[in-house]
Amino acid sequence: MLEAFRSDTRAIEGLPVRLVVALVVGVASMSVMLNMLSGVQGLATSELNVKPSPDVVEPGTHDITFTVVDHEGDPVEGATVVVKSGTAELGDVVAEKTGGDGTATATVEAELSANREDGTLVVDVKPPAGSSFVDRRENTAILVVRK
Image 1 (cartoon, rainbow, N blue to C red):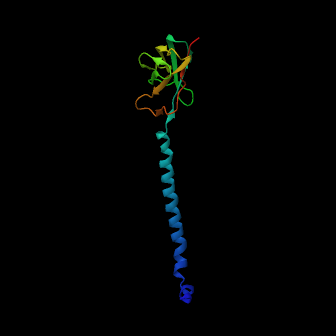
Image 2: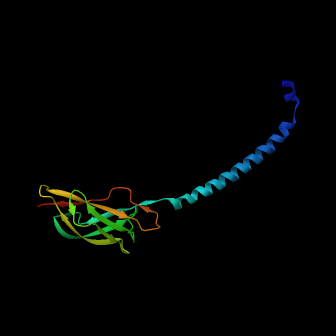
Image 3: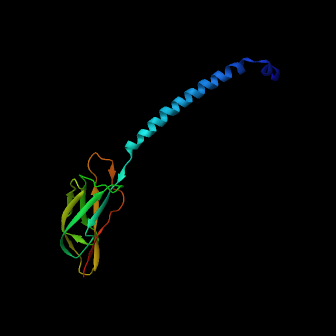
């Protein structure tokens, strides 16, 4: 049987052609796959962050300006900022939409329980509809401090 392999020269003649064809087909299919993967960037998401100003207030009614930015620090238009009770109490949940400059101003009425010296208001952001933005991380809370 070993002698039959040594005397058969046909396999050696066809091997380089088959190898070249396999290599060309492999490179072409790899090129198509890489081109498809480069389009995946369109599916990437960008984390939103909200910056309240001021972020420390006393109990009572305050106008707070919120700036919503993307991961590069650019303002985001059409995001909805939601402020709700945390360890500090808030009369009603407040929701405001950002304008072209990425800011929204909300009037909040923060209160602390009788036995608390401080507390927080929770700030969430709902990204604009149809955008690639998400808000998965915790945002800066508003600290309410009794003086």
